[in-house]
Length: 165
Image (cartoon, rainbow, N blue to C red):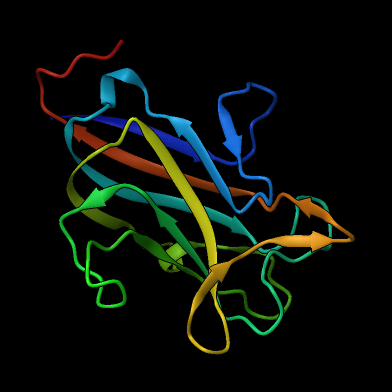
């Protein structure tokens, strides 16, 4: 097995490789060609999810919501009773009083098992509302949407015959 690292961030740094939705709740990027549509073992090994915009005060958690939820379009061998289908929730992040930087699953490693990476990976910020429904987690102020950073790092185990391009 060969291990590769995949770092996903909604902070583009001007590269133009990351696409953001208009409300900045979803970001996506093309999976590197050498990882696309391959059977891999995927583990989330690190996460940083800011509650507020970078350097700002606008929260990405809408009023009257519970912890932030991160969802992806990566299919894994899993099940979610909420959707009666595959689990695409990577985890939740809680923010104790005075803390703006959370970690999914309290910083514990999460194995997604064997899965196939799609051509485009999408990561979405959500929150549970007071009724227990998932809603978009956005920072909106006066018609402007603010970017609240999400940085996820995955370890990807590939077969030894995998080649990197």
